[in-house]
Length: 332
Image (cartoon, rainbow, N blue to C red; front, side, top):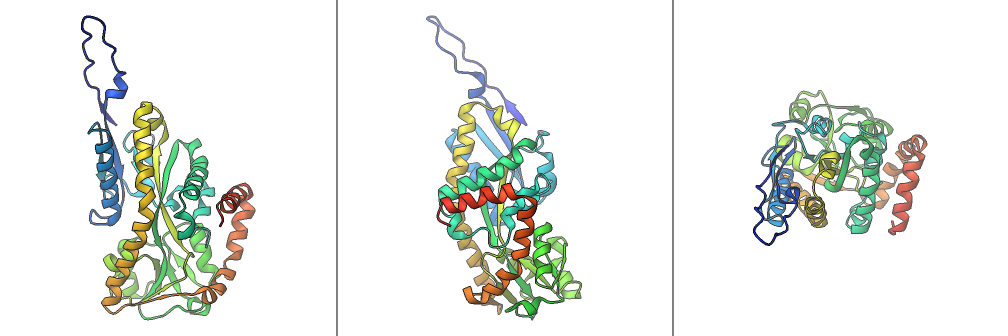
């Protein structure tokens, strides 16, 4: 962390009051991610940095290091507290290593766009997740939308459960996603995003669970069949901050950092939906097929993963009870 303290004003005759040095200090925030500099997530981080600079009249600056220039997301989470990273925006699955209760965010059909676009609901869920990680010195400032994951295969359309039986499917990671694929009769495997295209081409995997951005920017039109079961894999980024560092700032600076993120998050969810649709449209114009299940078509997929939800609830009943109360309170 680099903090350059401004010189204290010299008291003149008559005794002028001097503002606290900390409140007048310049603050440089180090933020990291593992996606390319051209990815919209990096653009969002830069936008947040610009908002911080504006609201602090240039006192608070944030430098974004994309593409794992400093750390990949998992290692960045581990580096919080060392001073090397102040804020990172990992996929929420990366916080499971801190506390497995965070896994409730990626339970099948747990989140929905409708619920997360209710500010009060999003705020309460964020507080719940942060309560899990704060004992490990990580505060979660916001949950941002990543994507509603879908199945992507070269030529195989996924329309029913049997279409996934025996298929080798790449997942983004974490126990829960693997459990979902097993519930559908598939075989989950975890490989780096950069290797997905080659693995599909060589037959090392049959399909992937992925996003519109990855389809357009990584895999390409060599995989033509995209199949979405809405809500099955609605993923989030967790804006994770070094809590000890943040708490050590002045009340004024803490307020700027937190309130600026709240303002940013208030519109991000809708914008992310729009970006998802734009990426998918790019691929369908190139000859790809995108199918989304309706409620009736999704029902068998929902039923097949009930055991995954019950298994999580059995391991973490208090977390599920707290989340269910939030859903009920906000009309879910």
